[in-house]
Amino acid sequence: MSTISLRLDDRDERLIKEYAKAKNISLSALFRESVLEKIEDDLDLSLYHDAMRRHKEKSESISFDDMMKELDLE
Image (cartoon, one colour):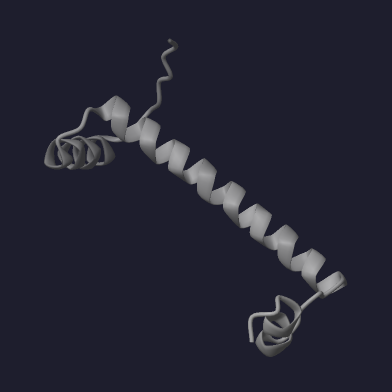
């Protein structure tokens, strides 16, 4: 396991420590979960933008009624 350090001003440090205490989690857990959630959000957003770009280039949309007919679910 590795250690990462960061610099915070006193105000940010107090805020972060109080938040972790209020949530009853360690600072390590707070930072780890926050960073991993941020990475996941960025990846999701990137995938969304890529999917929307591909959709605009070649839309394969069909209406709900046509889909129901195609799936023989009428």
